[in-house]
Structure formats: C-alpha cells, structure tokens
Length: 380
Image (cartoon, rainbow, N blue to C red; front, side, top):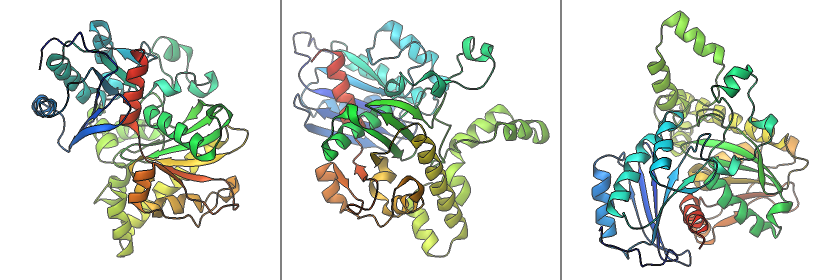
C-alpha cells in the first residue's frame, strides 16, 4: 500500500479514522461526500489496528487523503492541520489531557502514515469548534500562575459532532447558521452540551479535559474538587486510582453497578431495578442542568438539538430531559421517529408544533465532518 500516489488529486476519496479507547471506526468517502465503505471494530485499537486498516484498504479504492479524529488539540494546535513531524510531536504532548482518546489514536495515526506515506494526513480536532470561546467562558477562577504558566483553561469537546449537527439544524429550521442561537447536546459514551450564538460556540460543559460536565456512560462528569482532595487525604486514594475510577468506573456504570448503557438501564428500571432508576434520574437531571446553564449564555433559545448515540436512539431519555425543561419553553410529549427513517433523513424535528421551543434530533455525523474538514484543509 506504499506505492507512489503523489500524482493523484486530493479531491478523490477521503479515508476517515476515528480511534477511541475501545473502538476503531474506519470509513471511506467519495469526492461528493458519499460513504463508499466503512468498518467498525469494537476492540481497543492496538497492534491489530494496522492489520484491520490494511485489510480495509485492500478492499476499497485508494484514498487521496486521510482524516484523523483527534479529540484534543491543546494550546498549540487551534485549527485542523496536516500532520507532519512537528504536529505529531505536539499531539503526543497533549495526550495526557484526553488519555482515553488521544493515546489510542496516535498508534493509528502512525500505522496509517506508514501504510499511506504518499497522501496527506489531516488531524481534525474536537476542540476547534470551541476555539473562540469568550474569555469569561474559557477561564477558570484560579490564580494567574495556573492559568498562564500551566495553561489551565476550558477547551470543550465533541466539536466535530457539533459542527455537523449545527449545519443540519440550520437546514431543518430554514435559517442561516449565523442567525441561530441553539443548545446542542451530544449524548453518547461521552456527554456534553454547547451553547451556539450566531454560528459560534460561546459556552460548553466540558473543560480542560473531557471529564468535566454532564454525567456520562462511565465518566463521572463534574465532581466537587474538595471531594477528590478528601478522598486522597482521608482514604489514601492515589492519583492513578482516582484517574481510573473517574474515567472508567463512574457515571451510569458507577451509579447502576451493572451497565453504562441507557438501553440496559431503561429495561432494568422497567423491571424494578432501583439502582438503574437512580442512574437514569441522576443522568437526566445532569443533562437538564447542563442545558439550562448553556441557555444562560444565549439571548433566546431557537432550538434544543440532540445528537450522539443516546441522543439518536433513546427516546425515553430525550422525553425525560425535555419534560423537565418547561422553564426554558421546552415541552415533553415528543414524537418518536422510526430509527430507520431518522437515519435515512439525517435529522427530524420531534416537538409538538406550536407547543414551545423546537426540539430536533440530528444523526451523529462526526466521520462525515472529518471528511469535510480534511478537504477544507487541503483546499478542495
């Protein structure tokens, strides 16, 4: 797969690679944006990723460029960019800010660059969507030394998902993006909310790392920092213990004791499982808090938009969130679109017409957005 392709136009096929802590998503998009082929692996990226990628490439047309989802760009990579030696070094420097995401993504980047050395590789960052957060929204109330010398600030994440969802929202509402004030909510393994004013992110629930904010599948979300100090001092928990527990054994899984999947928890709650009921109640309250706090950064609320795996296919969660947001003009009684129809159409308005703020569901489009951003970086 290392044959010279330097003569090929970057306007050809785009290979998209999205590596996470427990999965690898591979997709190929044609020049017109059509998905040509894809493959999902539920195994953590590792040495086998190179084999998986090589097998995929043997079955599809050769790509003219490769787009990589990188969750965190850190302070030195504020825009999507071609990966060269300097960028690769900077990516390694920020891996500890998103260890569940950047750390497993880097071996995939290296494997892809080795297999496809003659095509451009582009790093597409979730943090870019939030790069112009107002200073008051990105600043933590800590001493100047922490902010300036250590670089402690809010970055925000899920930006690729938000960029895709925002464009679809504008289409659905028949409004230009730069005239919209909306709250976008990405609910999946990771969960966050974002306030968008006139096409720009002005506030978001995630912070320096993807651990802050809403309760998530296995991540705790926001937690009193004093509680962490207390756990260290009183109970002797180490930094590694805190890190592992907060990232992998908290959230819905920690609350329920059985699963971080809302589908499992909805079923268990229906069978009388009190822990599952508490997990869902805590999760939906966390989402309502996050949505309300984002609305505080807007002048008005033109729409509430759900995306992400939970946002797409968990109507019980959407209903419980919206039925508790009457204070924002959001109402329950939402329509439940057929998942097949939703996937085909890409988005659907689900509120009762005329009953309050529009509520939309947008099918997750991170991989498509990576292809879009890759072409944009390459001037296609």
